[in-house]
Picture (cartoon, rainbow, N blue to C red):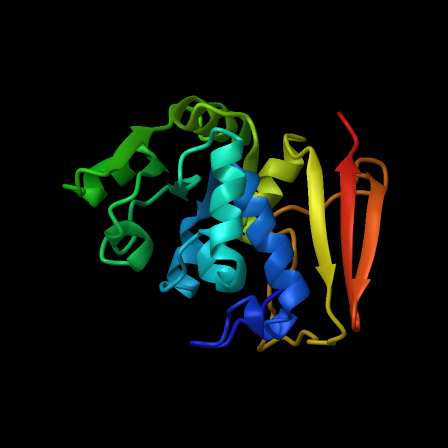
Length: 221
C-alpha cells in the first residue's frame, strides 16, 4: 500500500518508521542472497538503498556479522527489473559501487546504454517471474531471494506461484481510495477469482505497539 502522492509514496509513511517494521525488513535483507525490486519502486523512492544498515542503522554491525557467519557477501545482490530500461543510473543504489544486476528486455538494454562497471545487465528472453527468480539465483549464487515489489512485479510473481513466503506488516492506518486517487495495493495488474486466489498459511504473528507482523507460507500450485 502507498499514498501514491508526488514525493510521498514511501512505505515509511505507512509504517510510520516504526522500529519493529524497520527491524523485520533489515533482518530479511540481512539473510537474503538477492533483493529483487521493480523499476517503478526505484522511480517512486529514488533515494532508497536496499541494505540492512540503511533501514535499521542501529544494528548495522550486528547484521553485518549475521551475513559473515552465514558466509554471505557483505551485501545482498540488488536486482532491478525494468522492461523499458528507463531508470536513473545516478540513483544512490546504482552509484554505490556494490554489485547490481539489471534484468531487462532487448529494447531495455539498448535504452540503458552504457552502465558502470559494477552493474551487470542481463536480457530476459521470456520475462516471466520464474525467469527472474532463476537468473537472480544464478547471479547471486544463492536461493534465498527477497522481493520488495512494487505491486506490479509482486503481482506477476504471485500469479506465477513462485512466491514461497509472504511477510506482511499491518499498520493502524486507513488510507482509502478514490477515482482521483486509485492507489495501488499489495498486488497490482492481477485480479484473482475465488477459485484461484493464492492462499497462505499463517506461520507466525507478532505484535509491537499497534503494529502486527505476519508471516505466511504460500501454498504450492
